[in-house]
Image (cartoon, rainbow, N blue to C red):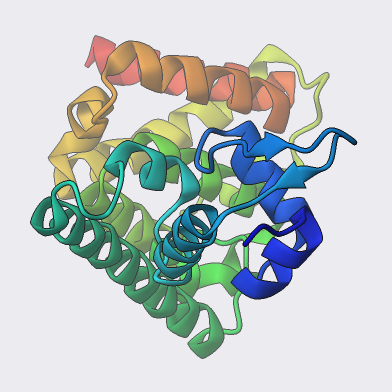
Length: 237
């Protein structure tokens, strides 16, 4: 008994393209060819194809199927590997569902990081950008604290949002003084903010590599100067 590629695919419930792909990645052995060049698949090829399809239907990635080898070489280990893979997939899907529930409940844009879902309506375009950056840098507890800050509003925020890029030093210094008072209060409330690197799992260098360019892009020169001077005031005091 011998079959062509198309016949094998039909018997195995897959496409011809899939059969050829399995050959390319080494999951399915190449068969012998007849004198006219056509492939001759044997029952062993069908068995292997059905095994591949079975594991693929169970959610095993093709790369992992190759690493597992033949199903009969160590069936217990193969099952344990599959179970671990599925457990990871289930956990990931449960997390995604929980995040989507928060997004739906607060009618937040889908790109809003989950910790900021409850305050999505207060963020604005720049706020959402900062939320995305912070979610890459800080741990969950820090993000929860940042959400609490966003839920309120500081006295300096209107002046900060409207200050012109070419504002003079007097205007920048006045704004910086207001900001320093608010930032000091934030540090008293959330001590980690006085040294944010402690809440950054990737460390200080990684945090700076992500945050500094983002701030340079999102804020104008006067706003950046005001922030810098506000921190200088804090350090001096």
